[in-house]
Length: 171
Image (tube, rainbow, N blue to C red; front, side, top):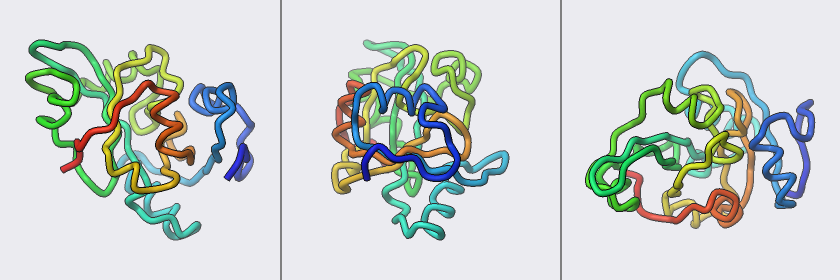
């Protein structure tokens, strides 16, 4: 892997890429075509077809709204091949309930558009949990902060950069 950039992307084209560079972590950037919805599925299809990446290595970033003992927005990172278990996510954060955040609130908080929300380089860093299945892979792919842009990095590096914990949150 290494600090390389595939395609024509400038080295620090998004805050997510800049966060990887600033931290000096090994990563690579992938750019692919996209449409207006199903961004994670598009990434899985393109990376699988063009680079042979197993779909379970590609993760989506979801902003959730916590309720109960702990409230506010948080980040859940799960495989695109699965679904977020909201009860498990709430438990991982010590909240009594979780629901998907309003898309406008997710965009305002993260500084990214829906479909391009990265767990890295967010405008307002949020508490983050990554599905524990990520640790089954030497590297995973997460949004690079723009639709059609993914970053490949080690799950431990993702956790370090975001202050994330790991928990079984995918259903």
